[in-house]
Image (cartoon, rainbow, N blue to C red):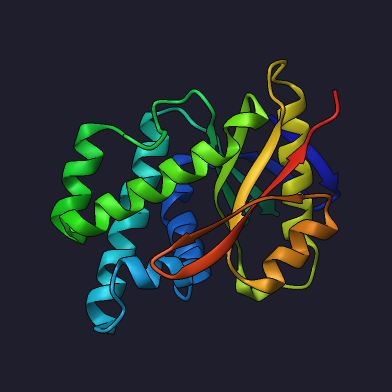
Length: 211
C-alpha cells in the first residue's frame, strides 16, 4: 500500500528499519496513558518506564510475527506517525502468542501482563457486535509535528486500507483522554461502550466504514 496524501507525505507499511523509531513515538505517546500507568504501576518512575519500553517492544514484535498492519505516515521518508491495527479474527487477540506472554511477564510482571490481556478481552467483547472490525491498538504522532494534521491523515489512510478488505466493518479504538475522544468524534467515531480498568474509565469508539 502506498497512498499519496500530499506531495511530501506518503502512507505505507512501517519498514523493519523504522521499528525503533516507531517504538520511540509510541513510548512518547503512551508515557502518560492513565490505564498503562495504573496497570504497570507508576509509583516508581524508573521501573514504570522500563516496563513501558518492554511492553512496546513486545507489542511491536507480536505485530510483526502476527502479520498485523503497522502503518506509518512518512514525510520525505521520515516516519512521522504510526498506527497498529488488530484484525477481529487475528491470533493477536486477547490470548496472544505464548512467547509474547512469557517475555512480557518476565519484563513487566505476571499480574501486569494478565491485566493487559483482560483489558484487551473486554474491549474485544465490547466490539464483537460490530462484526469483522479492526482495532486501533496504538497510534502515535511525532510531537515535533503536532497540529499539522498528520494524525487525521494517518487515520484517513487506514480507512482507505480497510476499504480493500471486503469483510471489514470498521475501526474501533479505546480512548481515555477527553481531547482524544473529541479528536476521534470529529472524525466520525461514535461511542460504542464505556469500560473501566483499574478505576480508569474510557470509551470504546467505533467508526463504520461504508463500502
